[in-house]
Amino acid sequence: MRASRPAVHPVEAPPPAPAAAAQAQGQGQGQGEGIAHPRGVRMKDPPGAPGTPAGLGLRLAQAFFAAAALAVMASTNDFPSVSAFSYLVAAAILQCLWSLSLAFVDIYALLVKRSLRNARAVCIFTIGDGITGTLTLGAACASAGITVLIGNDLNICAENHCASFETATAMAFISWFALAPSCILNFWSMASR
Amino acid sequence: MRASRPAVHPVEAPPPAPAAAAQAQGQGQGQGEGIAHPRGVRMKDPPGAPGTPAGLGLRLAQAFFAAAALAVMASTNDFPSVSAFSYLVAAAILQCLWSLSLAFVDIYALLVKRSLRNARAVCIFTIGDGITGTLTLGAACASAGITVLIGNDLNICAENHCASFETATAMAFISWFALAPSCILNFWSMASR
Image (cartoon, rainbow over all chains, first blue to last red; front, side, top):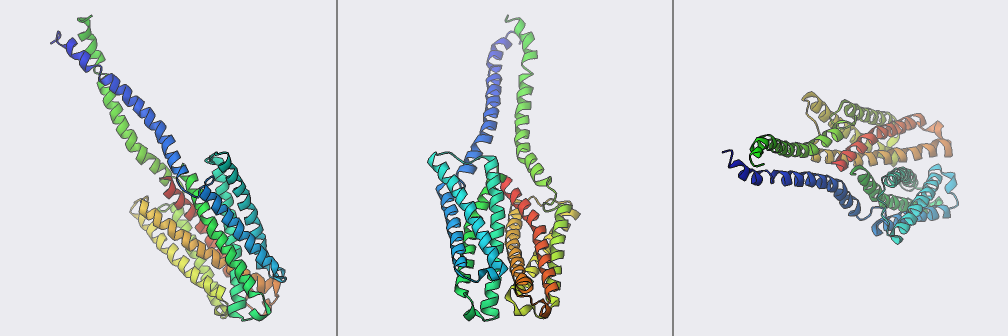
């Protein structure tokens, strides 16, 4: 027994050692990949995330429709008489500035091929998107309420620029619809890391 | 050498085996915990998540303020003449029903001490919260636009129930503010798993 063991042990003993080492290595690699791999998959894949062409397109669409809402509403001479319309103008200006600045960030990221997968940047984008989105939706809904009141409830479209008000409201809604995916994607990126 | 090995090996050999077994077990447990533990931490910790007392409180607050908005708005006899106010009533009814049903689910989960950390349930909660939240915010903003138009822009509060309209709008806003944390927490839970 004791004489045969040494012949058995060199066969028995080495496997556990490399296996354990491989296991330990595999664990370490697994952990390393467990951190590195899903991040790359989660943050890179969704088109529309900041720093991707789709994300830039969304930002440009937001800025364009907010600017359109602003231009159409500002083209009527009596919008300052209604608070909701003035608020729509203010919200559209804010939305346009925010989306344009993020579009420039996206263009920069695309030009230098640098990803925007920074935790702090994603957090700032999410909070900004949430605030501007809420303001834009609120302004669009307030304008829609007034527009429907003027057009359907009171039927005084003849004395008012109903078409302009409706167009501006619709543009603000479209801008919000373009903002929603950006906000959801950013929030998802922030939460899933 | 060969004679001493058998004496060494029984000491050397067992440790790797239990160690490897413990490692394998630890890995198994670690993996098991790697899946189970962060889940428990992520999904259990935030107060306000579904199935927690704070979550139940948020749901009851949403339902209460939506019901208050509904009651105050319905107490005025001329709300159907304005579309935005009718929309507020409809949105408040929907919000109240949704929040009450989720409050009952929370009460059930608390009574049977069962967690609501189900992926499908969280997904449904998030989508429902998002839809009702958007509708409630839209209704509140539309009503706010009309209320400000009546009260500040046109100064015809004498002929209208301005106080009731303002109260109902404020209640709808508070209901939305109570809904926002639920929605954000649910979305966070959904994204971080």
